[in-house]
Image (spheres, rainbow, N blue to C red):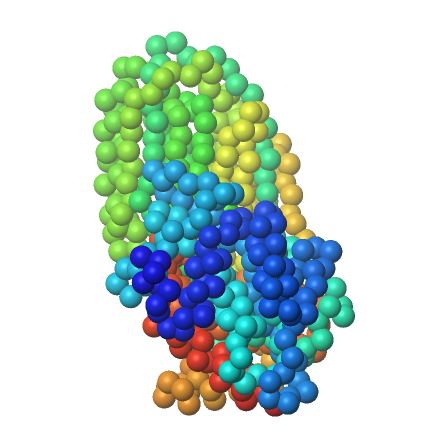
Length: 482
């Protein structure tokens, strides 16, 4: 299958796409991809440097006599998500891309096209000998997915260019000129345990089959969240069936909608049939509620070994009341842009570890005060539980520039190449442009890319046809910058 991918056009882009897929690169573990990039620069005799945070910059002189310098930017790391039935070690194993119906995806894992396709385009440009372009600075940042660490750590003077092409967007025909800001809110909720009540039986309740997706790009699509569904089931079970639980685990990453989850619960043995009928009923209810947006959702129950302890009753109530009441999804739509999400929040992950529950949430908004407001809504849901609540510094949004030179150039290029006008808009997802613009306030920026669907989930796929369009657009834009 990889031989077939290698024959796709543009060949150089797909060549590096496949090479990058072989290099493990989880967020905060970018050592192997950094070495790959530095070895690439040395092999091709390209000027390069690495800053103290780990970002790699590779430079190439102009081929068209231009005195301008353009920055092309993508991030090295990838979201590491897999289906529960797949054995895969993201620290060591190579991603396995396959072709399916005009798309490329991976076998049971995230593909990492976010943002290996941007990286591959930059590497293809750096080795090309027949492409007209101004001086290039190819910037590869670390840890975009879990903290924007690379963009946060970027120092003044590292970049010389005054135009930036961010190659980290996921919709062909859409040019992004602004993005939402964001903040993470993390909760550490303590609990104690007590002996499992007499005459109880234990069961494992599992949520699976949800699509998940990117908490910025996909939050408006009405998909299910495993944390919200599971907390709803347990909250009602505790109220009506004397349900107790031993552990609650769902979701993984702050910027991914929770796809899967499970809980170990106990109930009085006499209520076993009642519980199983309740789960069967909830499976039908949830399937109906998500029949268009997440039709594959499944709720299952199976017998399991009885645990010696369960979470104490007060802590159980604290967790389930907080999770059930915690907001998730779109909070507000833009008053200025049609069909554009202004503010949202993602109840991303709940993990049971020793004597604490660890809850991960993230908030986004293009309005700073609204971002702070929804952060406070999440905080309020957990404040009465004795939890430790931590909000990060957050990251800024990227305000559109109505007089942008690069936006005009890119619009004209797209229309000339493909005989249709692109949409020019902002994106609800976070982009590194906001942080780069803080450090380089005079940088003229735009973001574009090919079609990627299902980012941050094992359904991630990149459209082959739009990669060729993405490459053609990049080359034409560079040619026009004089």
